[in-house]
Image (cartoon, rainbow, N blue to C red; front, top):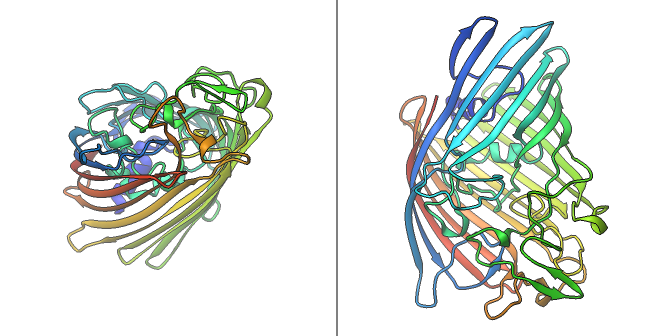
Length: 441
């Protein structure tokens, strides 16, 4: 990713905690006002193959008579952003705020997108304040990108494009998946209170409490190949909104989530890079009896850039955290035991003399059966023929071209091959092609 694009993504979109952003800067008395964001749109073509039911599978399906093809226009992994922020210096403190809105480009907004609470035509992902000083760090209070796995998504080349789509959808909701669920777990947009240290020779750390997520099932999300119907097995009843499968919204948590990360950035001659680790722990949030179960996950990642080449590697592993989104399918629907999950991705890029960045990446997210589960007991829906079987893995290859037409405007073309497999080793595959543009300001 070239310097201008990287600063635009890290600054304008994922706002820094203690300073105004480099967008449209307007002095206003004691304050400096900043208006920043992006506009993007892509024509997306998707072809789904396979007829397996996969609860939590991300790939689209074909039919008994052939492949399913769809075409449509919508946002990529980033929604459109309009961010308004301001900063000032008061009583020896740097004080700032950011409020942002995310309108969608798609023709409809009916998809309950994973990780976007109340996702419709307009999201509200950021609303936070910060205060601090370069001598001791800064404190953030409000809603912003979560701490765990945030560097995984910020390092993903599909952040500027489309990556995978949820169930082959090409015109619903206001974001695609990128590599979410096929290489890393979504960081989520969370209410939080976090503290970030000052940069100490390249080392920096963030710790804090965030809103705990509620246990749920990706099978409850439209377009993921299997619906969660009422079922009773081993004496446990689960439905789409109660029992072992819970809605991710509207449930009271007894404890917050605890998140933290540490990173070290370095440069030597023409070589730059970053190494990071992050983690999350929380109670399961399953009402009453299982609320004492602990969910935990950790990750490690690194990227290095030299002479136009970029290389990124990332790995995560956890228990009870689930897959794709935090707390999705992390616990058995039938005996309440936690499931292990892990995954990661590798990515290589090169900037051509034309300034076009070419990239290729591969990633996978795995979900294991819980203790006491079998293939028969891990079905998401046992009510009739074609019952969905729990996802085992989502794997994706992506190749992309990212050309900076100007320092703010980028043309993007991507191709992705997304494969989902269930615990019975049945699979579906989606090929996704996209072409569009993204403008930062």
